Length: 143
Image (tube, rainbow, N blue to C red; front, side, top):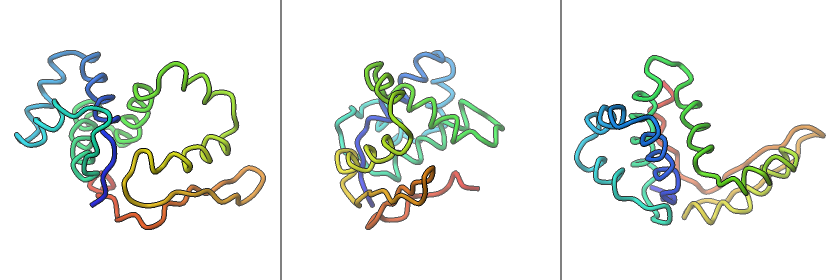
């Protein structure tokens, strides 16, 4: 299984801390002991299993957006908002989507220990983000 940095777990903790202690307690009760330990102690630079992070995100989305069909998408947006500092947010507003996607492909190896990302221009307003040699991501949220 592939590993990725704990940056988004740290962002998830920020979200719960802002939402309040009661909501975080509901989330923690839904986790087993191993995931609880993982959630509470990971720092942003620690490489961690993608599957473990995915399990956290599924539980977090269920807690934060119960019954919402778009809960994983909403969680992703909230985590991105917490993951990027104001400097990054400023710079991401300036370039085109194609430039941002291209930059994401270039920094893939900084965040993941497996796979290679690249972009392929498909048209004037279309770009593909391609990841090669990456194991299947756990998909329990696709249901």
